[in-house]
Length: 228
Image 1 (cartoon, rainbow, N blue to C red):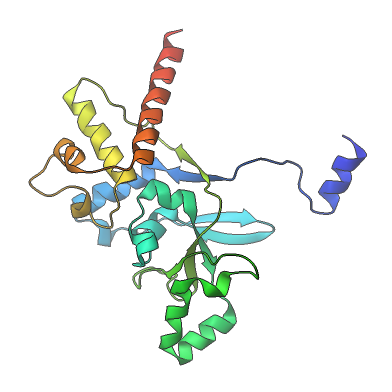
Image 2: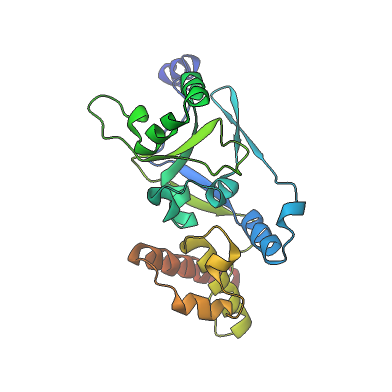
């Protein structure tokens, strides 16, 4: 190791650099949540909370719960899950802000404008309070960040589109969860619809369609690798 590398590490400069920031989305937990919501067993289940070590501090993170109980502000309510993980982040409210809100509920609307988080000369990013049902409603808020993160799906093997009708149903189920804004299962698929029908009735953005195509290509590449 070079002298520069050692000194950078000792003064807290880090030991690696990257051009992008990555955000993980656990597909196992997403599908588990939707399945429980479909069978009406969500309220009886205790949510798992992820603990993240960041700069010698412990933070709780659950972007799946944060998404489902996100702010009703249009900047967040209209986001699909994939886009939410790309552009939204949860931050702690300052003690001063919590005290102000405790004494004057009218002050809560200031957070939705995002003005409190803007630096001089910097455009204010949209902010919004988490839903009242969220366990961190009183201590955290969510905001958009300037540079999108790179979403990384983790967990079990991801569904793929195929000629088999069963597999196509799984693929449509996954695409709706990721690329259609929702909070409840009925937002994704009505009781009298199949997942394929709901998929074909949904209008996806061009960006979402591009990501879907890339996911399909990735699956094809994995299949080709296994055949070698």
